[in-house]
Structure formats: structure tokens, C-alpha cells
Image 1: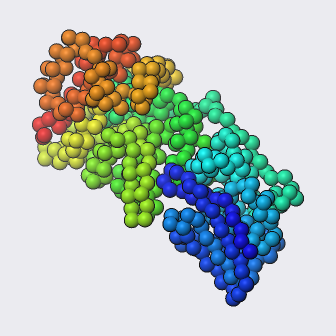
Image 2: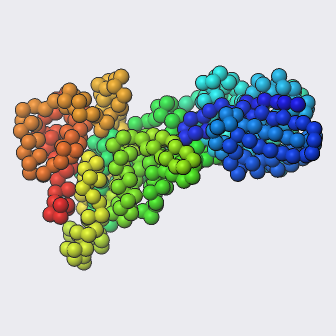
Image 3: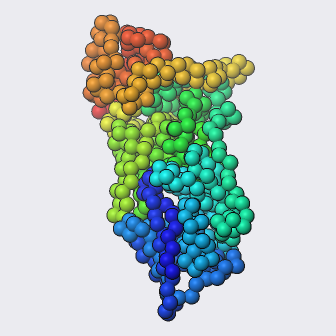
Length: 511
């Protein structure tokens, strides 16, 4: 007998339809899986056999052929345990084929028939909905994230017996209630009001967030670099539902949504250790999985101890920073993942950390300082729009009882500036100033005559590259937006120049 069961597979962030075809015929007992299965799919026969027997059903004896169509696409993972089991029971008449046709099935089976969670459910359900599928049996632990896809009824599968009983009408399927987007209860671990002093750095962070610019923090140990960086998510604009859905798709593919309730509701903050490899940061592995830069999509990628990262790892960031996406190619897979992140990097001014300190003398030689700073290349520095120096915090700042400005007030200004950019760039495919193309800059970055004169002087004095010039102009555009000015004035250029002067101070003499 032959059965066909609807299921889904995953390539990158895209789901594609997989038909599980099962033929049970007479002859010597045998079990063959075809359709380019990986090891996890081939091993499913033992999980499926044990799950069917331990759930009280009859496992067929004979020649069993399982075909996963399309046969020319590699199938990976344990997604297909449940659909294979349902297909075997359908092929042997224990489930009615017409009833099984109503659903799409995904899930891994335990030996006792329990349905276990799997990664990548959200993009697969989105793909199923686009293909006209309106009902799906999914593992209980994955039902919450899939329930945000309107138009698909999600039946939570606890075990194989419960799924069969629901298909056959012996009991009602456990339909998971549709979830709705809600950001009212979001709280942040860090707030700008807790940061004492460092007004210049806080202003720079506000500008960086308002325009989506990358930020470099340079300062002595204990100056508050890490605290400031970890507070940045609290002033980022709230996620839209579309952004949250895209972020959740990426996290779902990596399996990070297991055990979590539904959807990512906060902008990501990723802080990989400086020993991270290029593959873990950019993405890779045999299955071309997303890396930290994609997990930070629409959020913050924080690289503490910036010069301590391997040089090849830092250089690999250059193209994704420019493009906003990364394409990972492997022998068996090729996937493209979005990577529109805000890079926040922090570093000491020298190996011992005390160069320029008013309290502790620096014990590094000139050669050591030069070698340390040279770990960051000129092209990498060019891609960081704002450079800020953070000095030691004074006693009066630390001991004072008055709190700084709360994140909510800063976020209100950021939202106002982002709203200006949204209206300005409506229909152009960009979200904020950092994404401006050269052609758009000619139209939207209009300078007054005083501003033009100041920019010309800065270009010569700071020895700016063409890329650094455009980034200086984009930062000026953001400063003007925060001030509510349509034109870029001299004071906006002057403030933006401050955030490029650190490159001349720290790297000018060695470039």
C-alpha cells in the first residue's frame, strides 16, 4: 500500500514542501529511505519503529520504502520522524489517508512515542502557509512560535497516540491559541540613568542608535564601556511585528527558541567572546548555519576587547557591515542570512589599558602600543562611524545621588529621529541614515555653505578616505535629524567631526 504525507524542509531561512511517500509491500523485511537523507533521517527508522510499537500500534512487516520528495534536495535533521510514522500507519490502514491529508506534520519522535521539539519551525510554517496549508501538527514546545502565523491552525502534538486519535476523530486536537504581538511588558536589564558621568559617550550612543551607526568606545578599564554598550538596547526603537518575526526565524533555525514562549520581543544583544572563530561569528558549519552577526539582526553586536579578536575574524566582518547580509557557501549547502546589526566595539587604548590615564601610569612601550592598535585595520575603522574616548569617572559622579537621564527619555528622541527617516525614505528600501547610498546622499544630505566649508577643511585635516567622508556625512545627517533640522548645518558637521578625530589621535601617527 502507498501513502503520501505532507511535511516541510528547511534551506537557510526558507521552508520548502516535502512529500513523505511510503510504500509497504510483501517480501523479505527491509527498510530503505531515499531522497538524499542525512544520517539523522536514516536513523529515524529505529525511532519510528520503537515509537509505533510503544504507542500500541502495529508496525508493518515487509519491504518498506520511504521516499522524501523532491528527491534531488538534501534532507537534514529529525523533522521527518512524525510524518514517516503517520505515513506508515496510513499505508497499513491504521489511519485514513483522507483525514491525514488535512494536516502537515513535523516533529522528532522519542522511543516511547513522545513528540520532541525541532529547530526551524517558524520559517517552515510560514512557507507552508504560503503554499496554502492551513493545519499543522507540531511538537508542543514549538507550537507557541508557530502560532504567530495567522491563518494556520497549530495542533500541539504531545505524543504519537494523541496525534493518531486526533486525526481519526477519537479526540479533539489540541489547537494552540493564536498569539498576538504585544510589547507592553518589555523590561531592560540596563538603563542609561544608571550610568554616572560620561555625558559625551551617552550622547554619541544616542546619535549612533538614531541613525543606525556603528560605534567604537575607547577607554581605560572601569570607565564604563561595557555598561554603556549593554544599556544601548534600552534606547533602541521598539521592534515591529515584521522585524520580530524575521529575528525569530533566524533564532528558530539555530534551535535557540526551544523552551521559549513564542516570539523574540526584544532587539537582540549578542556579545561573543574575543576567542570566537570566524565561523561562529559570520556563520558556517556543514549545514551553513547563521552566526552571531545574523543572530544580532536588527539589534546590537557587541565586541568587547576589540583588538583581541583574531584579525581574520575582524576582517570577515567588513563585507556584512556594508551589505547587511551574509552568504555562506559550503559543499553541501548555500544560505543567505540577513545581518543588519549595529556594531558596538570596545577597547583599551593600549595593552595595559592605562594610556592617557590620570590615575595609573601606562607601562607599555611605544612599539607595544603601536602593535596593539594595528590589530584593527584602516578599512575596519572606516566602517565604524563614531569613535568615542571615555576617561575615568570622577568621585562626584560616582558618589552623587542624582540619576542621569532615563533610557525612556532618550528613546523618545531616538524614535522621533527615526520617524523623520522613515518618512523621508518611504518606499526606498532603507530604514535609517546609515543605509544611505551615494546617490541618496546627494539628495538628502544638503549642506549649508558654512557646513560645506567646514567639511572641506575636515577632509584635508583628518586625511579622510572616501568611505570615512560618506560616513561623516551620514552621522551629520543624523545629528541634524535629532535637532529637527532639514539642512545639515555647520554645528552638525562640527559635532560629527569630533567622532572621527580619535582615529587621527590614536592611529594617525602609525598609518
